[in-house]
Image (tube, rainbow, N blue to C red; front, side, top):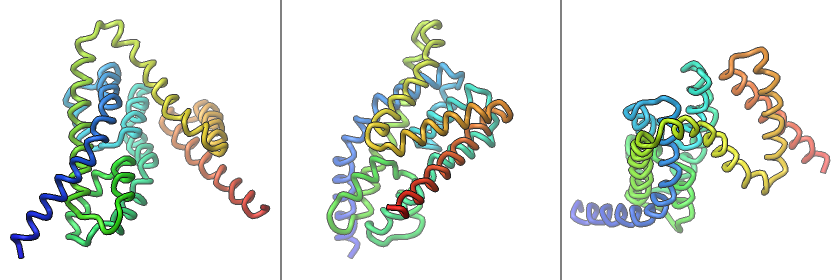
Length: 235
């Protein structure tokens, strides 16, 4: 039996790596930019690569850089990134229903590699998905993100000091670039972004920067969801 299972798993891993190659290419500019910004924020090369190795979440890592630049405490950074990444719990559960049954440790292992892009590639595949396929896709995405984060840092270290210092502005430009496409699609996102910005401005007068962001995010999300549900009931 093992002679048939192993080749099939190897084949599915290769298929996953082929499917994940497009994700690896897509992660290239984002990971390089993260490395550049990490250098300008004051992180070391080891800290930059370690964040990509252990966190592996683009939006959360950019958020963490912003909080580090503001001098936010470790607990606030961890809590904020948890909120940003909480959707991964649902994505992992959804992928788990599509993938063949396997050992709990194996499921936990590939769940770590589930990003928005890996989720999209995996869940759009017809029929029951092989474990090897998910692993192959996740490995390609993971290696690309980690390696290119380090490369981005190295490139940033070569740049002139004045250019390195100005890269902090690029962090805010990156957030705006990530937000604009969502703003065009849904009015709900516009209200969420505006209300969160207003709440953060108010809370920052009374709370540390990290806690003001957390409070604004939670309050804006809860408020928009409550307003949306009321509107759905009336319609």
